Image (cartoon, rainbow, N blue to C red; front, top):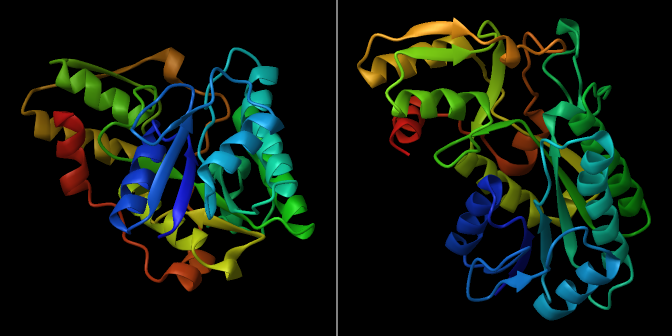
Length: 295
């Protein structure tokens, strides 16, 4: 039986990856600040250091470490960088010196690409990365470290995740925020700029792909977009959610939700991912949206 050590196992993506691993017959050891299961390791409050990860690897003895712990928001740039890039650096240092040498999956982000011009879309893994947010910068630093460690012999796969959707997604994300407002009976829905398109992927499909990538040594040292390759208009999704709510709902622009660097259109290229994993399933919003509204 294969064994996985999953950091951030309690998070939105972590829960989906854990469920997929277990369905595929893996033994899963979750590692986090607090216990979440009978076999979990408690690492305590971050920051975690090389020795923290080295101890977790020694105890869990995994074939693969899925490093899914991280943050999308922080009070300042240093906290963002220390958590997303710093924890990955500590983990990679621990793996490089461990008696056991598990493979490592680092969870990246489409934010690493930045605001690409339309002629650069769909975004390709071998294309330019010019992140414009602290989050994107911290994730791109993580990617660069992962690639560097792969060149020195550590088995690393970078899963560059786009926009996962599904029940239980964090409330600060746009689609989850809209669903929460509608669940609470809102007749006025506070929104930002809806005239944008995004590449969404079902979080369960993202988990399936991440686990598949981890199981093949041919993927080590490579970056993979975890996306559907389909761009979906955000206004269309909101209108579908309103229809499902069965109420008359007025849209209200919330200035706090408008972002000066918002990307108008963004879509990822799935060529590399499909070559490694086969066909990618597009998100089924007919199922996902009712699940979100019922969560």
